[in-house]
Image 1 (cartoon, helix red, strand yellow):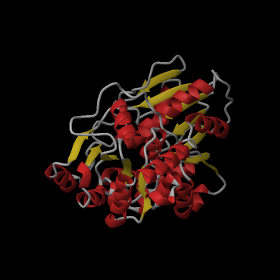
Image 2: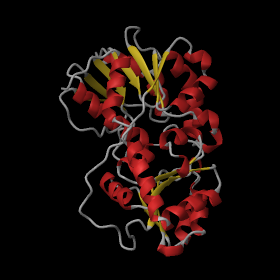
Image 3: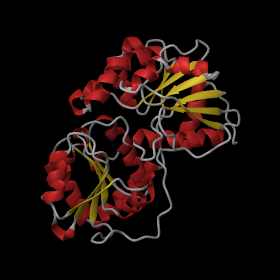
Image 4: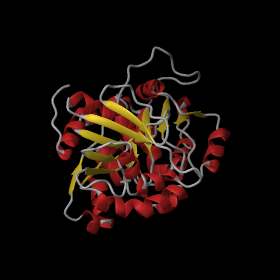
Length: 365
């Protein structure tokens, strides 16, 4: 099977979708000997070389958003290059218009932030998703969502566009790495810091965590914030830089992230909305406790009532953190529950379900 893939998320510094795609593609190649990948992007494609993974770069518009080229001109580019595909995977909610009729079209929907919380999105991406969100769903033959919550939300906004299509919930997983031999950064001690991982943007609601933390500094606790600056982050960054007990290393490597997760008191996800919540699964698979806002897919993914707090309630979050910090038996119990929950997520299972959905065969390659 020749599978075309929207590989634009496979940048050097990958976002959540890029990390998801990298892991899924690697597992798909392991599972299926018949699968040939055509990784298509207008930028550098950072994916390991493989005899059945061909990297194809196209040149987008010079002055217009490249999503317009992807939507309207990518099928023409593929025809010109003589590339015939059995299926195309729209990995980040965009599907080109006008793919050949014999080409199966699979669309992954990660979240509906642009419909649920449009004011919390970058305006350019919001415009593109509003422009092509509905048409991409209409073009798709089969739709993948990353959680039951995302599927429910999708059907509430796009029932007509999804009518008659097969929709499958396929949970992603998270890739764990060997703990590096390096030590924690100076000033950090095991189980003495709270961790946040995510882009600095309004949807992540980091200010609530900062509020909770600033009322909870007994015992030398620190807060470590990992992630790139997104948009409308300036005031949050100012608060981080003004507090000597908050460390901001910015973007960290997978290995460093693994170390920080494994040694942390907990990971906190205070987001207003998540389509899935990959850092939560990364943490649970690393043996870390996850504390999350009780909303969207976070409730579904974390699945431990004692570790969920009402969205935006800094006081409730502070009490959970205080108990984790001051009650060793409770902390051990929550670590064990989180570890067991993490075992429910598997890249192999996700890839098997995806191959079944698109009509591909799988056997260990």
